[in-house]
Length: 89
Image (tube, rainbow, N blue to C red; front, top):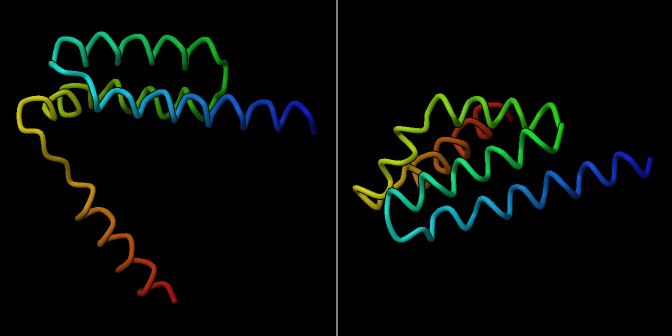
């Protein structure tokens, strides 16, 4: 039980650390931060976080494009999620 709680805490911390990525002032700083965060995830040994990390590494170019355009699709993703929840109920 304690191990599960520790793993949850580590995963939560990794998620919160990644939030700082969006505050990187340049694409280069964002790339350096991204690589640092990926290292932290790998060292954590948490399989599900590593799976997320692998997906994010495959999409790194798209993620780093945020610094060129300063927009994301978060709002449309949230709306789509609500639509999917309504369809499921």
